Length: 280
Image (cartoon, rainbow, N blue to C red; front, side, top):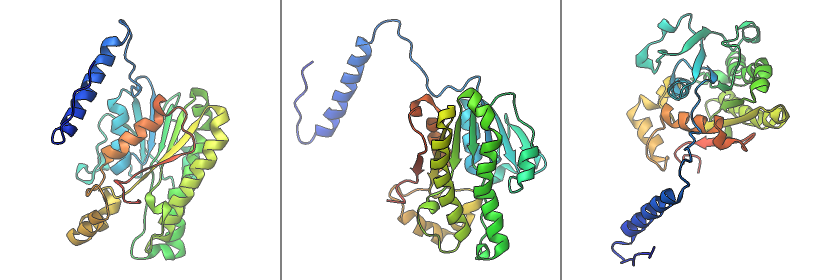
């Protein structure tokens, strides 16, 4: 195939056309009868999303469900019906159990959602505003949910994940990569979660368990309403994001699907930053 000549004005367009022609040629040269593999098909797999009742966790839960997985979520309210769709909660098609992950005994006593487990997504999180994390009560609450429970949940499901050669995905935050002036416990807990992802990734790899994480930037959820619900604060926040937009739960779900899929089969102990460039 002869490459077309490029004029200065049409260079970008012709490059795009050239790429399309090369892709078509590649498809024509593919051996007949070769089946395309969908590496993001989770049919027959069991997924548990801790903190999957709203926000980022809910988006991740539905992304796995839409790709064929049987998905169960843990939340903090007594029943699935207690969640308001207006707050970013959609529990349709998902199994649900109320578990207070801030209590290690509650984690230990929680029933197993299925006989097997292929993917464990740890998306639990809380924050205390108005400088409440500088007090012992606020600090202890945030650390218990955001960091301690990550370890407790991982150990609870370790045997099932080893049996299935499964995957753990820890949802942290870019707050774990820098200072957060008003929320010391939140920042410290997320930094700890990133470090724990590395350590568990190393420790559990020999058992066939891959442990990775993702660190979201600004995503419009209940926890970020302190910023997103105030036009001036939001305008300032968006100005510091190169993509000039907030992230969405669907953006985070795409990263989670990748990390749990065979596409990331040689990725271990890594936290993928998904922030639209905010941390650059």
